[in-house]
Image (cartoon, rainbow, N blue to C red; front, side, top):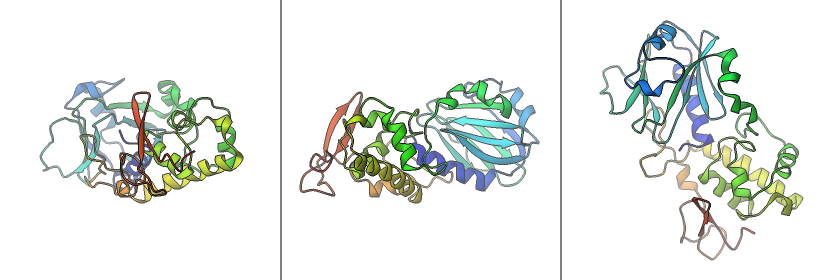
Length: 278
């Protein structure tokens, strides 16, 4: 699954490439991708509408039209958005095709049927997605002070890895970036907030900000597998070349004379440096 840096990169690309385009036609080859509207009704709602930007609500991407409605896309595991020319062959699993009056097409490829697409009036968004009101801090949406971060952290209970992956604390962090953040902060995955000194909270804060900045800078993380991240034009990111610990068990730690370790954390595997993460 893409994590926050990849979804933000996708939002920026969409805003730049199709954010102001007028919709010529919409096709929905897979009816099950839609929620709250039928495949027959969607074209009548969106065709002829002019784009007014692309925004992000947590991990939801929203293409806004006529400053009144949003085409809200939730990318599930294995799904991706793709920019295409009309003459390009249609990939198996393509669930949505938007053709613009200028600039080709935007396609949603969803072979495992995990994506969801909704057409929502802006004023109805809070009712349709009440979970957005419970989201925590968004480390790429706006600057966060370390005091606000620290206060929110100390109100949480549990282990640091789980807290970092909780959308109620930080938006959109998963197994990759939580491991990388904890490594750069020098903290074990199973520490608890009440065990942290002020200096450790500051280190964790800096690691969150710097890791998110670097992941966006390098175009996201593209690991081999069926769910490999690529951008709108099918290009992978390169942050995987800068990963310190994730999926590097047995390799030498970047900060110590010893191998990177791995451990079970719930139903996940977590990666860490036993010598420098305390």
